[in-house]
Length: 350
Image 1 (cartoon, rainbow, N blue to C red):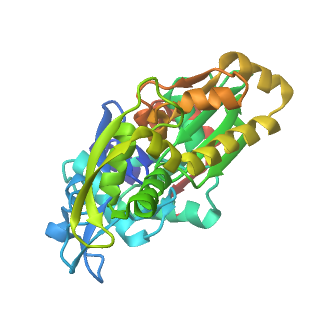
Image 2 (cartoon, rainbow, N blue to C red; image 1 turned 45 degrees about the vertical axis):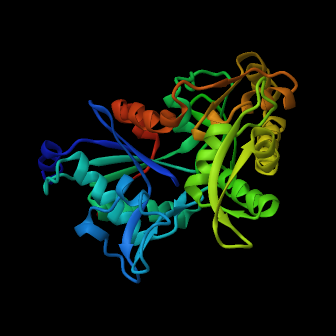
């Protein structure tokens, strides 16, 4: 009876709970929210700044710019919950945003998680969602969600390969008949690309920059393979020796060298997954190709590099790769009666 009552005031939600960004799909409405996974709290507490409103974009603007008594926190690391209480508060805020702060909203949630998640991490996600206000929670592995989101025919007896490069993890999977035949979860992804740029600038230019600057460099001139026309950009940072602001010009060749190690780890994970794939499904992948999703799919030349290293397997970047996973949670919600039958759900009663 209570479930029927709450259903009247709630919209089922699909959530891509990412290390960098959280996206929310609302059943019947589409993608309704996209915010950075950042929360600003008073130092030494879990109390959110601004009477509970310093979440998402507002909190991200505070990263590296706050006084000593305010801390901008990313509650998820490498695709999993690092701070349970702040994740709960962030989810509650997003639920309220979608439901216009209705106290009667108790939605069902489909949340994407890395395929390599442990049982403890798995339970932390479920409990965070329940305590944030969900009445029932389904967990969907990110490669499966991404494959559904890009429209791969995963319910057919053919091999489909998806590579989802998010902020905290790279998920590689071969899917057939609604199941993952082979899967690898690598905790190297977009954040590690940013960190590689930060370290390179310290090492080669004695320049200290923050995460936001490193991310901008990656977007503006980052690449995984040589470009037809190499790019340049100018950035500002702090000189490590003099401690004063200084600007430098960077070339895309430099940043490609900076990104070489994490990019090689991603490519190696793809190759290892292919090596373990049954021959019949490997043949399907050779014909159909590999699909790249997630923000990392937008790194220039990554598709060409993977195609080269896999000896010519076609590699396709998904349309709107940043939203592939959340769109997949939306597909699940729209067909929850059939797709949900194969998944365990979690409720407030356990």
